[in-house]
Image (tube, rainbow, N blue to C red; front, side, top):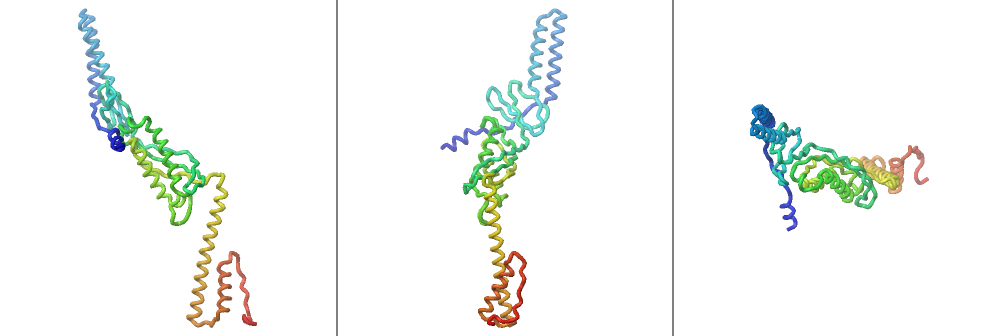
Length: 297
């Protein structure tokens, strides 16, 4: 029920029309000149009626002049007559509309909102700094004008709320299968874009682009988290080295057995495996020792 009431209360843009401004300008000048002529003629002839008609004609000309307005490209005019919305005009140029109507101009150009750095907690509770840029434009002029007090301020507030919610929804970093702020940039930006569109659509605003521009741990834990990342990277690297070394040792034993190069008992195999793993897994250069005897002497 509340959703239906909210939907019915939303304003929607209605396209309107306007007269050619140059034609109305010429007409206004003709009416003005006619009024001046009547005043002069009445004064010369001593006919008060001509003077009164001339003054009224001049007032009409001034009234017509007041209806002229211009619109630049990507700018719309909202017509309001005694508090009632009478439509929106989107064409650029020189036009005329009822002077009694208020003509409120709204920019339709895309604008950038460069968000400030926000200090928030990620999904795991780690304090981080995050900032985003939002490219947006007004799509429905009626919603932007009548459904919110100030649509520019509304965009700023809702964008900050969306970025905070995004930071709370994902971890800064994590496992390979987990979507994180640091590693899954495209997914995170798409999620931010969708949430912003849901929030700003209520104000007649379309989000053209949204992306994170700054992401880092807060200074108070940055060094600690950096050391943790380095430790995790070292562990992951060593794990891959060991896995590769074990595979190479296994392949070497299989090749020796298959080609019958030498017959190895369990003790010789153990010694060979130990030596190969030392060579393959060592971080420093290994100097082999040639054994001229046997393992049993």
